[in-house]
Length: 358
Image 1 (cartoon, one colour):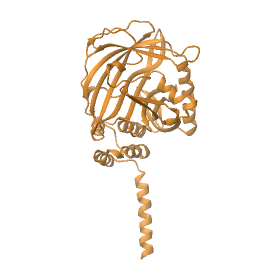
Image 2 (image 1 turned 60 degrees about the vertical axis):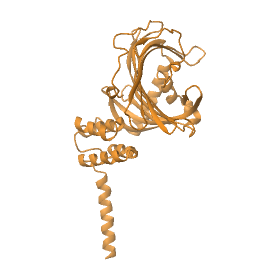
Image 3 (image 1 turned 135 degrees about the vertical axis):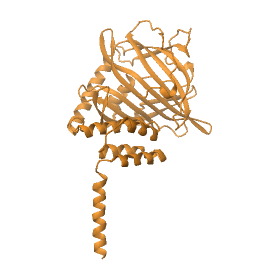
Image 4 (image 1 turned 180 degrees about the vertical axis):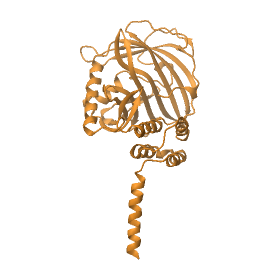
C-alpha cells in the first residue's frame, strides 16, 4: 500500500511539473494578477512566469488595463504580456535569440554605441520637465512644477576630456526667467534634477573598464522595431551612479537594469536603470531612470538621442518616504549655438495621471 501511495505521489508530482510549464490560461493569469495586487513583492515571479510559460489567450486592451490596475501601473509586466501575445501569434518572428545571436547583437551594439558617443556633435536641445511627488509606493503623483530648460552639449575635446552639458532654465510654471547664465545643472532651482541622459548612461553601461554583466531576458517591440532585452549590472566599485541630496550630501552607487537593443541595426532603443548598493544611512533610498531613444536630425544628419526620460527618486523625510518624478521631453535638437525659444505649448501643464509613461 505504501509503495502504491509513493508511486501515486511521484506521478502526481510529475503531472504538476508538466502542468506548470504549460502556457498560462487567462484565468491563471488573472489569478496571478490578484496575487500581485495583494503582494507587490512577487512582481518578478509573475513576470518570469509569463516569460517562461507563455500564454494561450489573446491580449486585449481590457486585459492590459486590468494588468496596469492590479500591478499599480507597472510597465514591465504590461510589456512582457504584450510580447507574450506576439510570440503566441507568431512564434518564429518573436522567438528568443540563440546564445550566438545574443552575443553578436550585444557586441555590435557596444561597438556602434561607443563609436556614436565619440562622434556625437555639439548641439542644443530644449527640455520640457514636469515634476511631481507622491508618497513612496503609491504612484499617485501631484504636480509640483514645470520647467523649460535649454541644454547645450559639447562633445569631448581632443584631449579626451568628458563632454560638457550646460543647463539654462528658460521658464518656471510659465514665467520666463531672466537669469541667462548657464549652469552645470538646474540644481539651483531646487527639487529633483538629473543629468547625463545624452551619452553618460550609455557610455557607463558599455565601456569595457566598467565590466558590465549582461544577460538576454526577453524580446520586445519599441516604435515598431524588434528588440532583444538584456539585463545588465555594473558594480558599485566602478562608481557608475552619483546621487546627491540637496547640497549637503552625496554618494555613489552601483547600477543595474535592462537595455533594449534593436535586433537589426544594433542601436539602443531604451534603458531602464536602478541604483544599487545605496548606503543604508543615505536619505535617498532609491533612484530609477527610464530613457527612450530615437533618431533625430541635427544639421541634416541623423543621430540616436533621448526623446523621453522618466526619473524617480525615493527619499526619507523624517518618518515618511516620498517619491519624486521628473518626466522630461526632449524637443528641437539643433546645432550648437542656435537660439532656444519657448513656443506655444512648451510650458503647458499635463495632468499627472495623463503624463505619458515611457
